Length: 231
Image 1 (cartoon, one colour):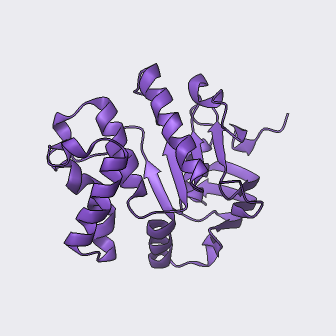
Image 2: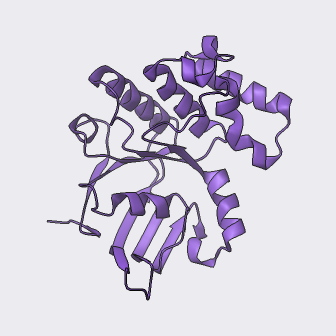
Image 3: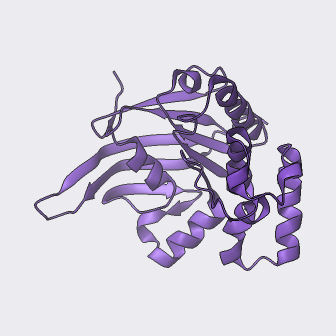
């Protein structure tokens, strides 16, 4: 699928300050301007402390900016009460975390279907959705295994399946290859490229060269000292 010119992510003069008005006040982002078209794959590149994780969190509707305007999937975040921000995030964002964040004692199936529980999806529908994803990602043979008993590569696919279970338009990944070898890292990026071709918008925060040099990235966005570096 070709990339649409319509931005699914739009940030205008976005700043984020933690502990505002206190002695330990920290400004993590300063006047960010960013447009990400629907169906594209971009990488936020920056050192630890650069602000890229905060930027990813705003895109992911975890919290609104302190100032400026953030419009994600057509909704201005600053106008959404916390409860509606949470609903918007559940419907529009799929997260893939650095440590995968699986619950080791739960089965692969239960881990994948966790995001559906707050939405009131029936158990039967949860199983059907998960089965399709697990088969597509070639991990359906592990459906009933405890997540703590499968390999790192399999955990990666469980994390991707969980991120996709709500069929969100935006997939966010925070340092997803940090604990993977080069083969698994390439597998991950190949999967992200496939999702991009299916019309998903992918935003990856990483400084891994295997990610930043991946040929199907549409753009690398350098983040430095809370700003987008345009030098």
